[in-house]
Length: 185
Ligand SMILES: [Zn+2]
Image 1 (cartoon, helix red, strand yellow):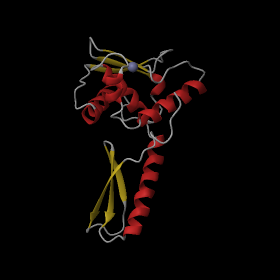
Image 2 (cartoon, rainbow, N blue to C red):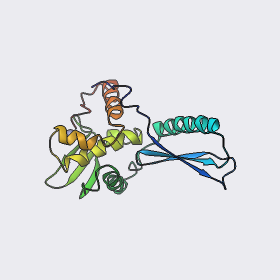
Image 3 (cartoon, helix red, strand yellow):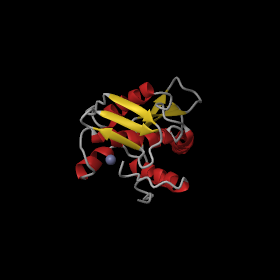
């Protein structure tokens, strides 16, 4: 599946907060699917527009490279899964274990609902965190819904960068000469 640009690049929700105590500094962070932008209290509307756009661009750029907070260990991966389950699946997926496993030839990850376990390919250890998050949300959703029917995708697409991540994984698969399906994990 190609990355259908546009839909996947939809602007995130932005929550602009002004603070009187803040004089000059502008900062931004992501809270789930919302980007919170902190601005000085006295900034003009025109400056606000400029800075919100600028901070979204900077956040995208730095996130494009940042590795998953789960990359360090299996424990970190499990902690990331708990957070993603809470953010996107209402906490309904509660994996018993999540492990990094040696690169599987045919899969990026897999889930075993009967045992509530998830395995993630070491191949993903150094890819950007937002891509790993997609794979984790995908596998977490399988703990709730097996198969790839409409109900399954409805759950997964709560993660707004799903299409983009699928495009990224397809590119990675092609570049490495692998035959890994990004939407059939
Ligand atoms: Zn799947």
